[in-house]
Image (cartoon, rainbow, N blue to C red; front, side, top):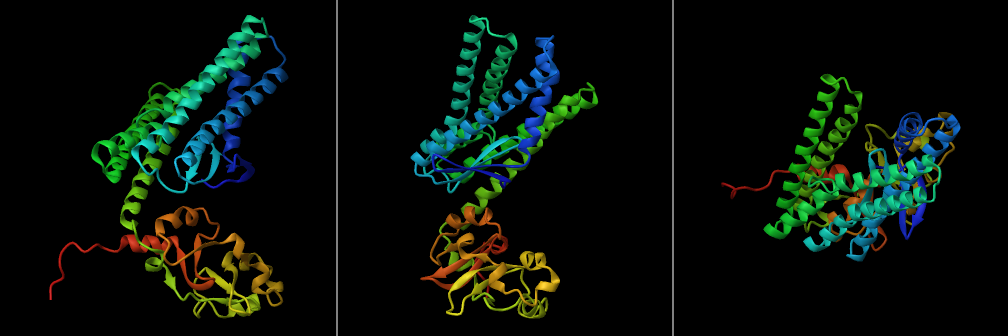
Length: 379
């Protein structure tokens, strides 16, 4: 899930928002302002309901961020690098650079999320009780009570033993500890995630069709997300197993076609699509042979046609600082998380600063699709 808006860094961890966050903010705000708040405490002006509802929605997002930051902090303490956190419509996601090294580390990283939400729920419940004892406005107490309840619900839901929920990670840690096989444990947790997802989809649509309750669409949507995420997690585990120990040099495309930094876009386009420029992204070389960046067809296409004859490749390329780089001996698995979040979905392979290859997600997919040797070759 790529971020739409960056919020900067918190504790050294990059934090961003996906555009779908606006959906959850709108849903929570409308549900509280037009439902729960006026039903529980009628008689207040509409602007009060809407303002308090919007504030509650923002605090709810902050609690989701605290949940994911807890994962990130514990992951870093257990030697797992964190690439960032993205909040989106169905919650948040902490992007870990690699997997936990041991079942115990997996247990700590996964368990701290629900624990954080549970503690937040307890603190908010205490605040609500304190405000009620001080005879504060019942509407304000209602807002804190709702925030407490939603955090406890978030903790309980995330503790369900099904991937990709935190409970699924706990289940995987348990299975990994019992079997000693990380891949087998991931398969088990992913199967549980798909089972829970289908249960939520079926029951959600049943509520809509037979109970005429449109709110059933919400669990159906979450269930559909769980199915897709659990399946993707299983595939990623299979990929990690297949690529374990494989260096970048075995998967990359060696000696890629390059573009001179001084070449105009018109000259570049004249060579394709049937000439040497038949790909969609190309390393750009400076006059001294060093790599300056990457030129993509998307950036070429975004340049007005009348300006292409006078625009050079180095003027519209992505600079090297914005491009993922790797060394030939680096494990593919260590590179993959950076590759998947790269805007160009490519990595330049450099050997002591000299370009020796390029690696794309398609290269890795092609390597995974190659049949394995199941029997000795016959002569």
